[in-house]
Image 1 (spheres, rainbow, N blue to C red):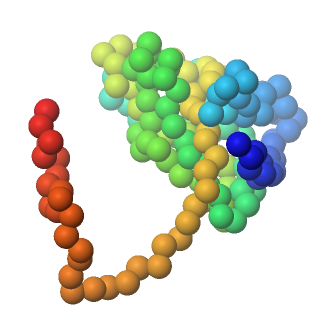
Image 2: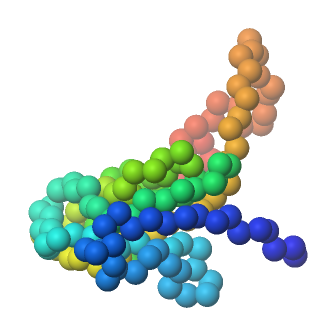
Length: 154
């Protein structure tokens, strides 16, 4: 199997004097697909059940054209604490240069606290293909055709 070239993503700390103590996104094990990203909070954030918060990371990035960075929940945070992402997966586009902020939601029945340096999401790098759409009057038939949700059973 031939290894694919790794895209270079440039990371900028927006306030290195304040946030230089936080690690850059990184894979936590050799086989990890996602890079954990940390909260750059100035103080603890208490999230009541159902609360939504946009959490800063203190980072901006330059993603090469033809790639995206998906923002996904961390399974441990979601399963053990009930904290997930509002929109998942989120997408950071190659032309975005603003601060990466993570939209968290507390789906648990208890108040959850997010602290500075907590690993709050994971980032997955992926290729992007911009499709060419062609309007048509008909589509080819398939065995499934219009079968939607639950069409193969529960």
